[in-house]
Every structure is written in structure tokens, then in C-alpha cells.
Figure 1 (cartoon, rainbow, N blue to C red):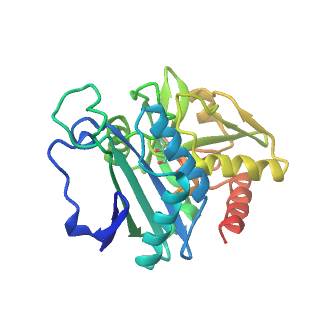
Figure 2 (figure 1 turned 30 degrees about the vertical axis):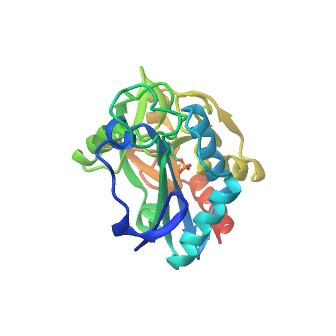
Figure 3 (figure 1 turned 135 degrees about the vertical axis):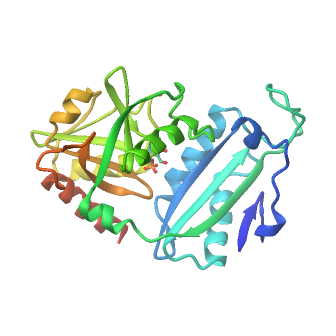
Length: 277
Ligand code: PLP
């Protein structure tokens, strides 16, 4: 398999992680996941912009411009002839003797991107998924797409341990987002989702859905909702690059609405499908 290592396409075997890579030791780095539909990267600009923003927020200087990065990712996708799947991109602060503070200025970030074949999640899109609620124990800069994913890993595993596919997180009863998705609630024909602040990742799919809702004249409220309201919602769905717009049909074993994907979720799914097609 061919991967991107810094600014070169090389074979996967040529890429090695040093024991003192800061991403490996501290989770000191950032990442993106970009969906590929029919050979094209979907929403490439917003993904690359968010990657640049995450880098800036953690004071990591990247050795290339967003234009150059987009060209390199395009080369990677074309070279691997990826039709349906994902591109994973990450940058760590580089390799240096282990100490918490930043390494010397001449330490270069370690940048890697690779492609994965993956079908769209048709079954989940059609039937919906089951979720649990879980306490949000993550740090207070969830807007940065950082490599520190332990809070998300533990939450997702709690869901899996209970036979579910996603954990809907809350801070003191206030719903934030999913462990790897944004969460939307439908109540009385209106959408509710957490405001894009430091407590959630500003999902690219979230923004696509907000734009679609606007076009469809579905009222949107970027407001915090409680776990109680989540349980009373007419419909709940999650969004992400890989899960698109996926209905949530049960939470903590209780059915959401009628326990099947609701009409507003279906309308948004149809409109999303048109966008990617
Ligand atoms: N929230 C979290 C915590 C995530 O990890 C992700 C995606 O990985 C999302 C939301 C969805 O973001 P996007 O739509 O940009 O994939």
C-alpha cells in the first residue's frame, strides 16, 4: 500500500513510528478523516481548513500550505485508485527526547496520510443504531481534533459493551455530542444541536446538515438540550463523515419516538444523499 509520509508517497513498509514520536507518547498531534465518494474527497476544503485550525490551536507549525496539502492528498487518493472509503490524515509534533514541553524549534512534525476502502454504512443508515448515554469525561477543548482520544475510546467501548453503536455524551445532564459524532434532536418539527463551542467538535457533516435544514425550511436551534429532552425527543440522529446522517432508534434501551427512523431524519438523509451524489 502507498501512503503519504510528510510530502512523499512511499510504501507503507517505509513508514516507521519512532518510540519518541510525540503523537505516540503524548497524543500530541491532530488528525482528520475525509470521506471519498466515487473517487472524490467530499468536503475537502473544510476538512483541510479544520486541520490547519487544529494545528494552529495547539501551536504546531505545518511545513506546507493547505493548497499543497490538498494536492498531496489528491495524489494519494488517485495513486491508490480509491473509489469508496476514507482518507486518514494525522500530524504529530515530531520526534524528540521525551519531555512535556515543546521540543526544539527545528523538530519537524511527523505527517502521515493513508487510504482505507470502506463501503457506506447502509444498514445503519436504513435501520438506525442503538445508543447509550454516558458522562462526558473529555477535556475542555473538544473543538480541536486532537489525537488524545481516550475519553472517546472509553465511551465507545461502554456502548459496545452494552450491544450499542454509539455513546451520547453529557456534562451534568447537558448533552454535548457522540463519542465520534455530533448529535441532533428533533422536537415538534425543529432541530436542536449543541452550539459549536469548545465542548464539541465542529463537525463538517453537522454543518452540511445545518445548511440542508436551512434550505428545507426546518427550524434549527443551536442550543444545549438536556438528557431528559433527549429521551422525550420525537427523533434523534447522529452525524459524521463516516456515519453521514444516521438515525438513533433507541437510547439506554428505550425507544426514540416510535423506535424507528423518523420523517425529518429521512428528509435530511435524502437531501444529504443528493449532495454526495
Ligand atoms: N464529534 C466527534 C467527537 C468526532 O470525533 C467526530 C468525527 O470524528 C464528529 C463529531 C463528526 O465530525 P465530522 O462530521 O467532521 O466527521
